Image 1 (cartoon, chains in turn brown, orange):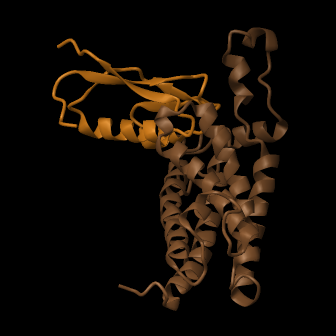
Image 2 (cartoon, one colour):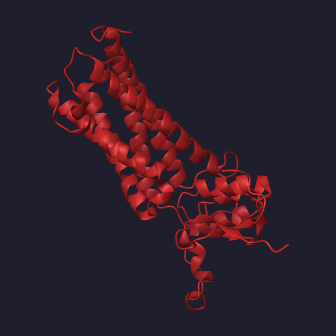
Image 3 (cartoon, rainbow over the protein chains, first blue to last red):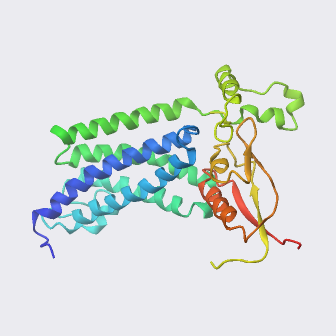
Length: 222
Length: 79
């Protein structure tokens, strides 16, 4: 067994921290693609959803290793409690504390997704919104605590990840995917409302997609 | 879960939860069609449990729904 004083635990902490950051960047980006109704023709929407689900599990494993090696490493005194309770670490109190907040939020998002069929969908969605906050806190944690995140390739990875997720966030909150655009025409109120609601952009896209041969996959509003 | 040899199921939709993601039509194209706005139209026909392919794709559709709007309802098939 590796001695708990060897530097390898510390190296593993640093490496898995960076890999977790990259993986969670991919996970958040895929989640945004699903939420914004990307896919249908070349890549299935369900495929993006399945990738989101699968890669998130891999990312949680890396996060677990990152946390476990930090606790096991005896060079910095970070206890098990400090993993979950913020500001209880004597080593880099604020940096590790922010990491603990991010871990707590990610566990909440992860567990509610694991038992998704037993959680009210509104609750699941509300909790899932906190993944954005968790990611933001994790980035601050990386910049504050990251040994490699201050210069060179490590800093580059952090900045590129931040840029990708910031772009995803802007897209997610601005795109407002069309959904009930046609519902009024079918609802009992449809005769009163007359025209289905929905912007020109949506209707143009609808027109384009009606002539598509791959109807099975390409008949959605987006 | 063992193989269920008798009975069947229908794929049921909660239209209030559905937001027209369209995952179900990709995962279970035999049972789900989309209307022109992207909302699912279910065939509503009971499928025997012995149809393993349909069972599998239906289970994936239920799991893959981002809004948890689908469920499998057991029905008795009259022979």
